[in-house]
Length: 64
Image 1 (tube, helix red, strand yellow):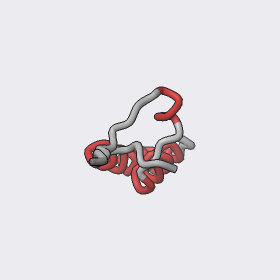
Image 2 (cartoon, helix red, strand yellow):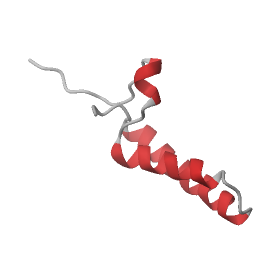
Image 3 (cartoon, helix red, strand yellow):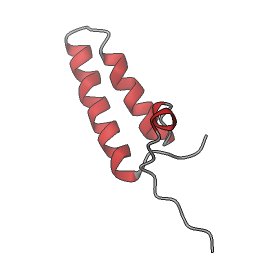
Image 4 (cartoon, one colour):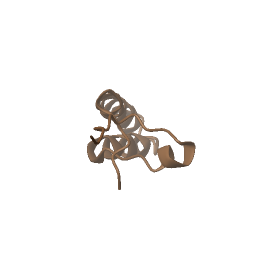
């Protein structure tokens, strides 16, 4: 798995994941699992949907 989630994207995913997870827990809803998915993708720096859509927010180092 190649990194495709950048630093800013990572922090946004983790924060939104915590918020959605807390709301899902509070309302005892399955939507809290969506928050868990955002947290996991933020922590491993890979989103499975990004390659399909052709998105990459991770800065890559150029080879000289």
